[in-house]
Length: 77
Image (cartoon, rainbow, N blue to C red; front, side, top):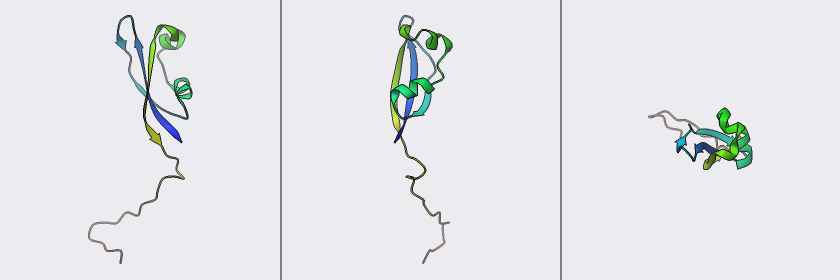
């Protein structure tokens, strides 16, 4: 099952928090690779803290249950 991650880079020296990005991936390492990190963070990742937060899981199309929409006032009987 795929997971939705929030990736947030932080500069620990200046306490600057860069914009977060949501990424769908199979695991945290793949999420970091997919994330569109700022150039400075990608060039020098050891100088930044990168927070990886699990937001939720994403179900595949095969797992999503199909629901029949019924207009109000209509009876299915």
